[in-house]
Length: 287
Image (cartoon, rainbow, N blue to C red; front, side, top):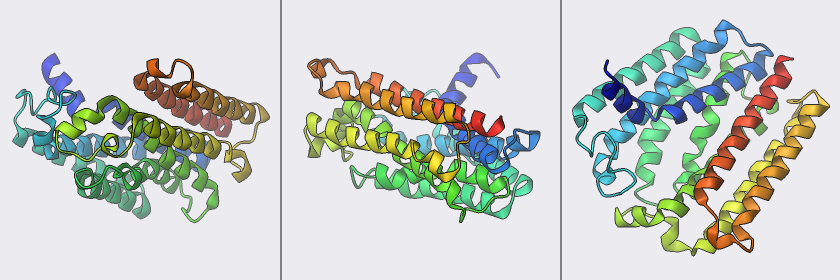
């Protein structure tokens, strides 16, 4: 496979996002077992393939809308670098491999969660985006499924409340994560005929909504110790410190230089925050 084809594949599979999703599977598994073994990589790779396939399928589903937005018209299908039929084939193969790994290598709960994630993202959320500007709220359920798969694959029950704050954290985090992009590209969504928050609210109102959800994300993270997810005080302190850092950095959207606030910078901050959180709780449970 030449470099050009690899680049197209990485774009189609939204590889960075898919990789992050698979990392949260590992977090769920580590929380369930307290260890990092070769078995950890079975559900992790299952979701990596499934997320890549689901993302490629999303490219196929939104190929006509992507042509209408500056941000997306350079994607592989609308730019003509690959035929839509080939993308559909790639997505089916990747989804099948992901589900097969979960079916053969984990358990029924993990497999069914993976199947549900595929149906929810490509069957429900993708279509809801054409109907309502608030599609991201039910769509964010996707964020909580990978750690649930890791937890289940590790032999623990979803009825155990210990995992709930983690699932809730990834659910909430997805919302401001997406709405920060709306601040950047809302007008393009409108031009493509898609519902957008920018049609319903002013920029300042959208910032307020985002900030509320960011605070909720930070608060949810600080609940981890109360559910027995954190054993070491230093990790607990670090989580509280990160929560304060996130709120402080995000509050700049209302400061004296609010007009110069970069949603792209806020987007990077909240992503770094989520990555540091999963690193901390993983380290705590591996020590």
